[in-house]
Image 1 (tube, rainbow, N blue to C red):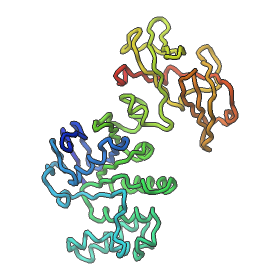
Image 2: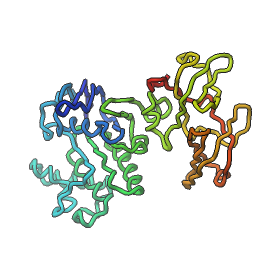
Image 3: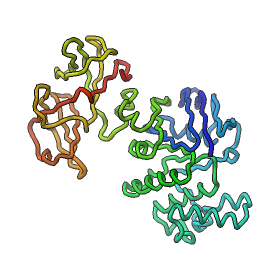
Amino acid sequence: MASIDIANIQKSYGIHPVLHDVDLKIGDGEFVVLVGPSGCGKSTLLRMIAGLESVTSGEIRIAGKRVNELAPKDRDIAMVFQSYALYPHMSVAKNMSYSLRLRKVAKEKIASVVSGAAAKLGLDPLLERRPRALSGGQRQRVAMGRAIVREPKAFLFDEPLSNLDARLREQMRAEIKKLHKDLGATSIYVTHDQIEAMTLADRIVAMNGGFVQQVGSPLDLYDRPANLFVAGFIGSPGMNFFEGTYRNGTAPRFETEGGIIVPAQPHPALTDGARATLGIRPEHVEIGVEGPDALKANVDLVEPTGFGIILHLSFGRAGFKAFTNDRRFLNVSGSLPVRLPVERLHFFNADGNRV
């Protein structure tokens, strides 16, 4: 396995820049997830690491060696795509061993590594089947097995689960995590699904508009998002935001544009009268709680999910959400006292950055 160093990478198509000064160091054996909305540049960055896209400027090193000018086959990496790209006329075993046969690896060695990979992925009873006789999840495991047998320096995953249904995605997430634990392989995984990012990653790279917004552990991004984009993208349901003004003094508070007064803690980075955005996650909104700092919210909609309940609430025209596991709130209507705990509040300045 190997480390991957990305230094000052930029990518443009003609006069249109799509990646801006990306700097990233990925440690040997680390699992890093690139996450962001469609068009943010995450797949382009992955393809540049793989050698499928040229580098406009900057440098990529794998195991300390510059690879900018190397062809994909010379970079010693394996890629798992969104499309399984299996040969329909070949058996599972032949699909998995194809790259080894091209390199004229000894038959005994091929048999050994295919058998080992098949055992890890639960493909032993399927080795003689052809792709048309496999389910979507089984085909994706074959694609992963094809990558594993090469014993590459790094694995690159480009949204490999996006074609699967919800249950299969959940199952395959667990299998990929177990596989990484067993192999200890350096891995870069691209997804737009923040749940995949949170559950799989050692570190997450949040991207938007071709820029890296924040790099950190899943809980770093959840607990201390660097800006409004990360705060809104990480977490499900997403973070609630209120525009307004911060007031300092003997009783610090936040005044929303709708006139709601939210008690707050003293904040050294916010001056009295500063325009700001207050954020709070739905799961941190306390509902049905009376007290001096309770606020009255209108109940607009109740969504039961089985696991919990999402309440769509509002202060006037300012809508927000609360999440609870308490089924007493399944049939609530009218209005409801809520509390926004001061220790759970996030503040962002007028530029959208965390303060």
